[in-house]
Length: 377
Image 1 (tube, one colour):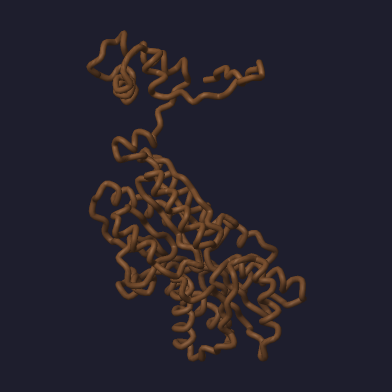
Image 2: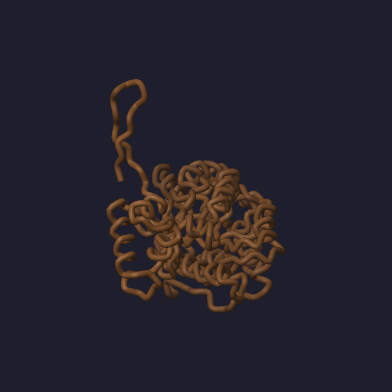
């Protein structure tokens, strides 16, 4: 609704946009605000203890003023806002957007809307965003902790306050937090075993800092596969890099300086792996002849790079859907079992490692054990 506002001392006026309130509708319809609220809460034609004339007058007034009920205002009274907050560390690739789409679709089907924050890998942005969501009284939170978040204190505070929340992709050791992750230990083992099966013996790995649960679990799977394959874990081949394409390009220079140079590289991120592959093409390093490369996640771009990337596929849709269903049960104060869901992953073999004689994909078959869930902490 627009209104004319006089500017004091100027003799001029301007048109301002005015958001109609419940009280505006009540004044125009000549009824109380509570009557407006009760009538507009139900669909037209449903039984309600007000005359049809009063209902019509209220609805016409609301339409004329362009009034739209505020979910947040209703939540302040009824303790529900119909809003869920989502905090992710990055939107630069298709991993978290893929999860977000599935999460939103499942929540929308149950009448909830989703508010999204990109923390840009910054734990301080993550913390402030969670505080803002709590101030807005969202009904629940879904959070993928950033790589710089190594302390679970904030999440323990949410737990103490009994705020419904679910962690996705990353978790914390020895905590009871509800979470949805993937079987990264098995995925890392499969990736490393694939490289060993191709005859590679100098297998490097690159991940983020080990306090991050995904890096720690994947590193454990990598090391276990090497030992099972009769290969030593060489600290020279144990590298770290930010999960970006540019970091992958820089990483190649470090690999080329090693003696002997690795003949295979397992990246805990598709972004790093793609950066390495692109840098190899520029430097004349042959993929996979000189260096076999595996990524992790199976982002959209991994299928369309100049050399298609072998990777471990994480089920983004299933992560989003599972997290949404888990959160809805938490909001309803229903029992959730299991509290820590661990979803299977799948090795996808493409050109960056060479095509083996065996089938081109392998899904994790076994069910996640308590050991696995502990490892995801």
